[in-house]
Amino acid sequence: ETRIGVSVSFTNASQLLFRFAAHGCLAIDLNAPNVCRNVPSCLDPLVHFCDPNPDALAGAVMRCLNENPNDMVREKAVTTFCKEHAWPECVADIKQYMM
Image (cartoon, rainbow, N blue to C red; front, side, top):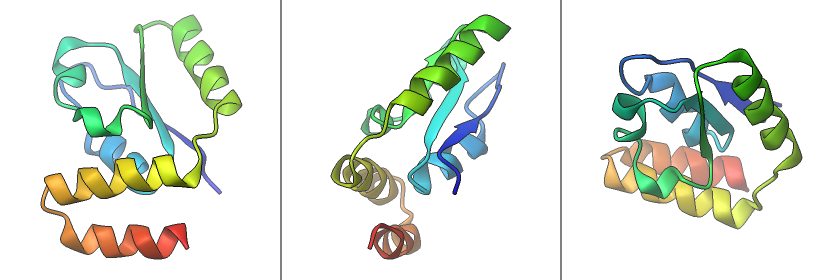
Protein backbone atom coordinates (compact mmCIF):
# COMPACT_ATOMS: atom_id res chain seq x y z
CA GLU A 1 0.00 0.00 0.00
CA THR A 2 1.47 3.32 -1.08
CA ARG A 3 1.22 6.07 1.51
CA ILE A 4 3.50 8.74 0.04
CA GLY A 5 4.25 9.83 -3.50
CA VAL A 6 7.22 12.03 -4.38
CA SER A 7 7.38 14.16 -7.49
CA VAL A 8 10.27 16.52 -8.17
CA SER A 9 8.99 19.15 -10.58
CA PHE A 10 11.06 22.20 -11.39
CA THR A 11 8.77 23.75 -14.01
CA ASN A 12 5.14 23.02 -13.10
CA ALA A 13 3.00 20.61 -11.10
CA SER A 14 3.45 17.08 -12.42
CA GLN A 15 0.39 14.96 -13.18
CA LEU A 16 1.91 12.41 -10.81
CA LEU A 17 1.17 14.73 -7.92
CA PHE A 18 -2.53 14.71 -8.80
CA ARG A 19 -2.56 10.94 -9.30
CA PHE A 20 -1.01 10.38 -5.89
CA ALA A 21 -3.58 12.65 -4.27
CA ALA A 22 -6.47 11.13 -6.26
CA HIS A 23 -5.62 7.78 -4.69
CA GLY A 24 -5.54 9.26 -1.20
CA CYS A 25 -1.76 9.23 -0.85
CA LEU A 26 0.15 12.05 0.71
CA ALA A 27 2.19 13.75 -1.99
CA ILE A 28 5.39 15.77 -1.92
CA ASP A 29 6.68 18.16 -4.55
CA LEU A 30 9.12 21.03 -4.70
CA ASN A 31 8.26 24.40 -3.24
CA ALA A 32 8.55 26.24 -6.53
CA PRO A 33 6.21 29.05 -7.66
CA ASN A 34 5.00 27.29 -10.82
CA VAL A 35 4.34 24.10 -8.89
CA CYS A 36 2.60 25.55 -5.84
CA ARG A 37 0.26 27.86 -7.73
CA ASN A 38 -0.99 24.98 -9.89
CA VAL A 39 -2.07 22.78 -7.00
CA PRO A 40 -5.63 23.52 -5.87
CA SER A 41 -6.12 24.42 -2.22
CA CYS A 42 -8.58 21.54 -1.74
CA LEU A 43 -5.54 19.23 -1.81
CA ASP A 44 -3.77 21.05 1.04
CA PRO A 45 -4.37 18.16 3.49
CA LEU A 46 -2.62 15.73 1.13
CA VAL A 47 0.08 17.73 -0.68
CA HIS A 48 3.26 18.96 0.95
CA PHE A 49 5.98 21.12 -0.53
CA CYS A 50 9.69 21.19 0.29
CA ASP A 51 12.70 23.22 -0.72
CA PRO A 52 14.75 21.79 -3.60
CA ASN A 53 17.48 20.10 -1.58
CA PRO A 54 18.00 16.54 -0.32
CA ASP A 55 17.66 17.36 3.38
CA ALA A 56 14.35 19.16 2.86
CA LEU A 57 13.01 16.29 0.75
CA ALA A 58 14.04 13.72 3.37
CA GLY A 59 12.41 15.86 6.08
CA ALA A 60 9.18 16.09 4.09
CA VAL A 61 9.10 12.31 3.67
CA MET A 62 9.66 11.82 7.41
CA ARG A 63 6.86 14.29 8.25
CA CYS A 64 4.50 12.44 5.90
CA LEU A 65 5.40 9.10 7.46
CA ASN A 66 4.35 10.49 10.83
CA GLU A 67 1.16 12.03 9.47
CA ASN A 68 -1.96 10.07 8.70
CA PRO A 69 -5.02 12.14 7.77
CA ASN A 70 -8.20 10.28 8.63
CA ASP A 71 -10.36 8.83 5.87
CA MET A 72 -12.89 11.66 6.06
CA VAL A 73 -10.18 14.28 5.45
CA ARG A 74 -8.78 12.25 2.55
CA GLU A 75 -12.21 11.65 1.03
CA LYS A 76 -13.21 15.31 1.26
CA ALA A 77 -9.95 16.51 -0.32
CA VAL A 78 -10.04 13.98 -3.14
CA THR A 79 -13.77 14.24 -3.87
CA THR A 80 -13.60 18.04 -3.98
CA PHE A 81 -10.56 17.90 -6.27
CA CYS A 82 -12.23 15.44 -8.62
CA LYS A 83 -15.49 17.36 -8.80
CA GLU A 84 -13.79 20.71 -9.30
CA HIS A 85 -11.55 19.37 -12.01
CA ALA A 86 -14.10 17.45 -14.10
CA TRP A 87 -13.12 13.96 -13.09
CA PRO A 88 -16.56 12.46 -12.44
CA GLU A 89 -15.35 8.93 -13.12
CA CYS A 90 -12.60 9.48 -10.58
CA VAL A 91 -15.13 10.38 -7.88
CA ALA A 92 -16.75 6.95 -8.24
CA ASP A 93 -13.35 5.25 -8.07
CA ILE A 94 -12.42 7.18 -4.95
CA LYS A 95 -15.67 6.35 -3.19
CA GLN A 96 -15.05 2.68 -3.95
CA TYR A 97 -11.45 2.98 -2.72
CA MET A 98 -12.54 4.63 0.54
CA MET A 99 -15.05 1.89 1.38
